[in-house]
Image 1: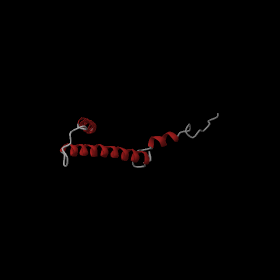
Image 2: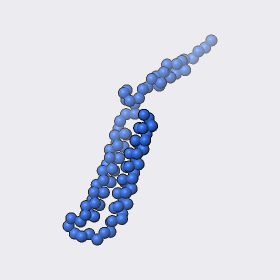
Image 3: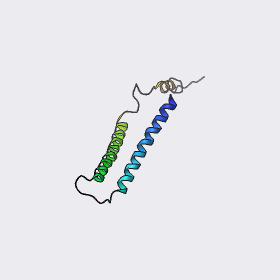
Image 4: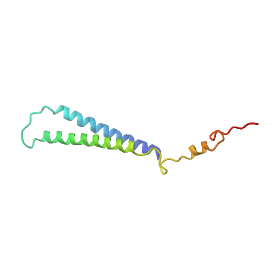
Length: 99
């Protein structure tokens, strides 16, 4: 199950990177085309690719903002049992044991 999730995530990332690279390459290649005027198909495609790139940028910014604003430790997300167990020792409580 873990392998399947990892492969799915890898394929999604590869698809994202491929679409970004292909869109950017298309925009660069046809940037100096001879426009035929109103309703030019090439200009429409460039506008679609620019919208795709800007949506990816906005999605990345929204993800970063969400990641940075959420607290690192929420009760339901991470079990903190190990951190609490470390503090329950005499060393964690800094107890001095004299004879």
